[in-house]
Length: 259
Image (cartoon, rainbow, N blue to C red):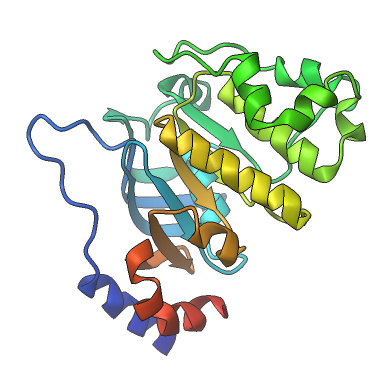
């Protein structure tokens, strides 16, 4: 418990994202006092976080800390939720789950969901074009990000390597017009060369104006990508730091993550 207390104190000393000023665009994502349950199990306890337009934010924490549950709660995939989830200024906490993605949210879960009976190209074109107000990336733009997918376009989806399947899972949501990407453990179990390729793709997407909320346990991977970091423990945010402050918060991170 002392590490949580120490880290919580560090939150007070760390500058949060500045409040929106008059005339500034709304946050890509703004979560306030979010509580969520799976049945009777209370899994999120007052989560507060923001992602600004064009920003990459990483949620760190040990297994069971509540990181994936936070992404699922945003998409309406948990049970009861209270608090506020605003996507580009639109309140989504009470929306049915099928109305969340059309706000411009793309969710890439850890399990990927690649269909064995479809080719890589057919998997890529499976999701519909959503009326998000934004155009999805073209096929050429997607293949420029992930050249492997062009080479394997006619291969059955589950015959792709694990890394290629992860690329395909990310590529699918880029077609939909989503501008806020929720990416869950996309580097897990992949070869270093594939992890590097995914990192380059996220950087390129950021330069195109996409906003990213990244759940990761691979701290080395996320440290080079994210602008800000939130650390979760027991369903709560216990530390918020910027990339520039990583080194001086090293002790708190070691206590919370074991890195």
